[in-house]
Length: 413
Image (cartoon, rainbow, N blue to C red; front, side, top):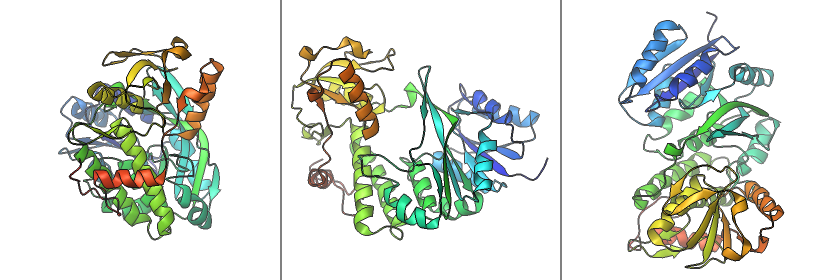
């Protein structure tokens, strides 16, 4: 086998149902100069045997068995054992196009790129959606410093990234990745991809972004966390990520720009994880981000994704809104509380006061609002999320974040 050009690292944990499809898609790549490193992160199911079986029959496959330490530790262990010029990360419950590695390699080599980003497919309940980056082209060191990084996390629209957080739609140079990955604390167990992507971007001198979709991301029902059992733990974990990003980006961004990016990123993550409604230790709602809505408003929730599920779960315990319908164009069987997902054609203007589009992405929000308008839905009833910085600052103070975006706790929570 020729000298290894790409090391593909696959963290493995409790995914025996999906793992063979992932591995098979990598072993039929048109690009041949790669090694496949399967990192079994102490998986308690049949993943260990699956990995070993593939290693016995294919010389490209290298298996590492380690005690469970989390996704970040698995990615680090894979990197320690990698020999390729480039690193590609693939999640074990996803799969890739036959030309995945070939395209990534040619994009990197043709443009002498430190970082490659491409489009991807999102597969959810049998339906596939193509996701393409808005930012396309080749960007040098000056572009990265002055155009890319200042808008990487927050591009001016709440909350939209110019560079996606994901590591699996990217190709990294191994020598550069080694300089940043091992500095990321293993305690960061929320937003690991963002910690890697943005700290790596800060040391990159050349970026190439292509719209070609090559990666199939599987959105699983069982991977979406539907409720927050311990808000303080969630806030602490988010605080670890945000304070790390602030430290790693402080040398490439001015303080005001950096603070605004991280502030809105943190706010968006809190909203998605909490279902929007923030409670204190007594269970009282201390923050409602959905403008114009009030307690006991009759509400329709659009979207059965992570944010939508969290809204339904939170409302099940708080009964803050009267949720009269839960709708989505990706109609499928899903129930939370007394609500089941229904098609968008099922709603009428006279049965609700407000409609919440459960997304933090403004482009998706605008597209959905347009579609609802075409169905005859009163656009005046579609609410926006509060993005007033004064309100966000007060929220952070109330729930216990300091100026460095570290969670210190609060008597009010």
